[in-house]
Length: 339
Image 1 (cartoon, rainbow, N blue to C red):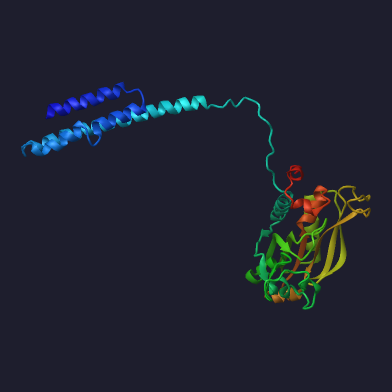
Image 2 (cartoon, rainbow, N blue to C red):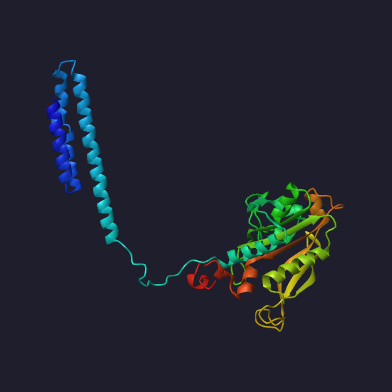
């Protein structure tokens, strides 16, 4: 039997050496290692051998089987490598051949503006804070000193879920949350989406983006606010741009102001962008009202602060000369490819 096993091993190896394809290797595997082959038959005959030589013949049979299996596996790897190389050679790409220039995606102008503003304020030591778009009436109005019957609370201006929950109308809600969570000093900005019940037109959208800022610490004055915003304007619009503070009224700040900048298109001479005035309004600001500080758990006798807020779409439209806000939401590649 040992001689028959050796002859079987030699026959299998010889045939595998001559095999010219993967199919032929598989055919040889079936012939020698399948269920109905000579090796299987020899294994069945082991039971008829004397018990003293049966273990030795079993060992030889297993060695023969293992050697054939290893040889088959090596031949398969060899043929697979050959096929892979042939495929790579056929499918090779000549990278020197000129190709058509195709449109490549770019950052959206709103994303560009938010990113640039974030970098400017982070360079001045501000942190970036975020909050939920669905917030409480308390955070959106009450803690920010909004009068109980202020028009902004009406359903014609605000999206309500319940009497106590709404889609935030301003990112000032994040300011309230930050003041309730952290102790002064606080220096943060809060970029994000806001929602108001507006009919879409060239300058209005029911969904828009804001960036609001807040500083609360001891001995904060209007001079700190003015210096901060002038630094921002200079870094964002250019060193030759001037600012102008006009008195205004906001429930969450006192005193309050609207901030204008010289038109960066005409340098203050007057054009269609600034409607001939030479100045463009960019944001609202003021000193944080003592009631807001107290509503958020901060001692208004010890701490003061300032806050400001700007519409990202407005800033983007001014910076890039966009005349219709709806262009920012229509995903027209002809428009977006300009940025």
